[in-house]
Image (cartoon, rainbow, N blue to C red; front, side):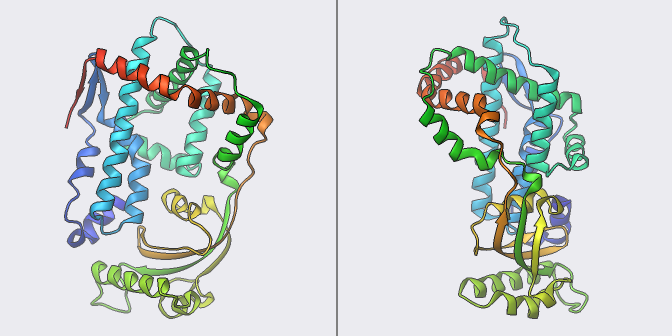
Length: 328
């Protein structure tokens, strides 16, 4: 696990891990909304994929890590607070969601956040002391809120065909079947512990990886540097990995490299064994659903955009009327 690995091997580099240790506290209250509790379990579970990606991207932590982490946590907590406000507002309506739709949404989130790895998904649930049934309840509440919000602003102007097409074009890649994604890249792997260099430490190895990254960004040949420095089975090939399925990669690692533009140098990225520098060569993304299959969802997105200002005023007014207590 990345967190444990950091604590053991990179303690000299991590000056401040307090933020995350507080965020993953699993027996406390994050906030109260009209007397209803939002637990730190809920916040930490929703935050765990973000933390894993940030920990991979920022081995030394630092101000940017802290800024992005706090921003993500605050956003998640705000979403959970607003969700509870809306649930309270509409609890008399008796809205319901078909169980099959909840199952589909849980599977989608598992695929998107954990590369479809159910074992890792359940491990994160267990770490946050959440059951699958508890997570299904969270998912159901989110879907109910979406449905209720759509009802609240049902009088929004109907989406025009060009608006629907534009929205679809903008987000269709995010709707794709990511399990079909493939990528070609070159990599340089620098182990945290190098048997060939007994004096090497995680700190000196990270510094070495950072130096190589600087050289690459200055125009040095990636293939040559990989052959001379990488410590894995792909070194002799200049670190080349062709057509690797996304599902073969750690979810946090995949999220970073698939989001990068071709030719970009990434790293050093932290994993469970050391530090990796990557140059993305080509991505072949999984197929996106046709517009006809997702039209209803696209129309809802367009309506929400059209009513966003109205919604912001509405939820701001409801916040003022609610009793909200946020715990440190």
